[in-house]
Image (tube, rainbow, N blue to C red; front, side):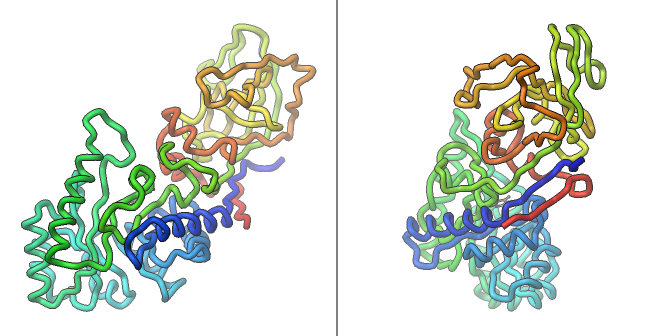
Length: 385
Ligand SMILES: *Cc1c(COP(=O)(O)O)cnc(C)c1O
């Protein structure tokens, strides 16, 4: 018996990085434009070292993460890259020694710490609508810039993170926060210049392309091969993960006979189901379960029950593939004697035909939410090139 398996495609990561980098360089009006690759949380749980190496091979020379331990791990691999720690912190000696680009979150911060801030590259954070840190008014921003100038603190960048980029709402909150930021940049760049201006995650870049005055974009999920929404969908981005289990038994249920905890599935008529050796304990989101599709031998089937280490698939009906992900999914009934599902068959939960973003559209959760719980202690993990 094979275990449930996670396959991570490193050449997909590399080619996504290369494509997005070229797209930004082609469309930006700035000479030194580029991509800051977001690799927080162990590179969205795919493994920081291997992911960073793949992005590096794709041409990425600027990384960002939230944790200084991850900044250190990247610096230990590469001396010729920029590394931005987006979380404000006070590890001044470490950031100086490791050449980490640091976030300057407020006027208060620079007033308190300026004596320790020399010889570090600083990017000022603008709070925008996110407000988890960052300066809150143009006056505060100007105070920081003047104070920094008087104390010899090197301000190299200005950035923000849009809180509404992944959401399309009637009030157009994303457009509001974006336009306020663009207006701020227009004003502030009359009096100060920055080597780095960046704000856009994958969703914001997909909506607008690189924004005026910006030197960089700061995507995560697009680099991992998933579209935050359908504005940027093309065939250039390759999904990086494949998640599969194996059929461990095939069960015949008579009408009214249940399977799973608390009779989670009770068929109205005689039904065949396959039990698969993967469940929420392996990091598969419960919402990804019941009612959604898996692929066995190139046909789509529906999940009907979900347990910690097992999932149950109804195998005497399959989804007609051409109509999949469409409201009008056509269900084909098969006589079980003719079914090609057998014990030992591979059952795909995520692959190129079942990319994470299709489940985001169906309300399962964002792509990063689906990726980050995958359990490396229970899954057999394979990196491929
Ligand atoms: C996570 C994150 C990103 C990347 O977001 P995606 O939606 O994955 O592109 C960019 N900037 C910051 C500050 C982040 O925390």
